[in-house]
Amino acid sequence: GAVVSQHPSRVICKSGTSVKIECRSLDFQATTMFWYRQFPKQSLMLMATSNEGSKATYEQGVEKDKFLINHASLTLSTLTVTSAHPEDSSFYICSARVFWTSGGYNEQFFGPGTRLTVL
Amino acid sequence: AQTVTQSQPEMSVQEAETVTLSCTYDTSESDYYLFWYKQPPSRQMILVIRQEAYKQQNATENRFSVNFQKAAKSFSLKISDSQLGDAAMYFCASNDMRFGAGTRLTVKP
Image (cartoon, rainbow over all chains, first blue to last red; front, side, top):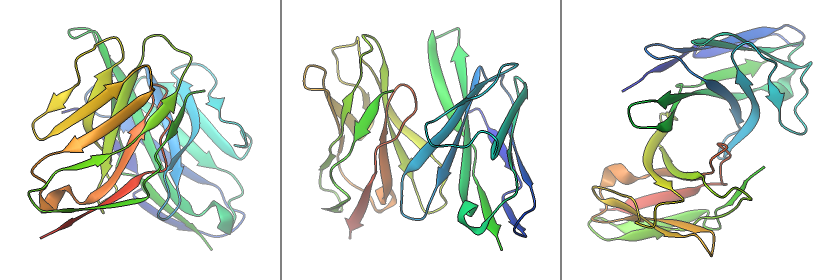
């Protein structure tokens, strides 16, 4: 099946620094990418949806200046957590949507996640 | 935005038995997909099953099947012949990829 990678898998940073997380679709072109954060024992909370070449659509309550999303190509999206603080520590997951023309349907693939710890 | 509700935080099933996980949703769309995902301890999301709203037939994938009640906006997951490897968090998701709160499934040997 199609694979989505995330890098890094784990990152520890100091408070006030910025961290960039990459999400790549390895063997397909993604029409849309999604970013989630997941706190321990909780569900995935959708942060934003992005389409290649256009601005991301952020969910209510998610600060777009804090969580910068760049979707530069059909295979790469990045999430930058700017001026990170301990409360930003979480598990961040991306997913990529592809439209299979042969079957006429969308399918979603998830990355393995990135654990961010802000000291 | 579509909303998804899972009202069972935890469920338990005996190995080889059948268990049903509940999900309700709300949408203004006329055509849409609904999904069940499994998240094991590795935290990698795995698609379990997908249902297209315009299809009246309930989706089935081996031991996994859904009971899709469009009028009631209900989308439950039935796991037959439960296996130890089925133990995980299960999330129901809407067409716009919003997730329910999840149900933690424990399988007892």
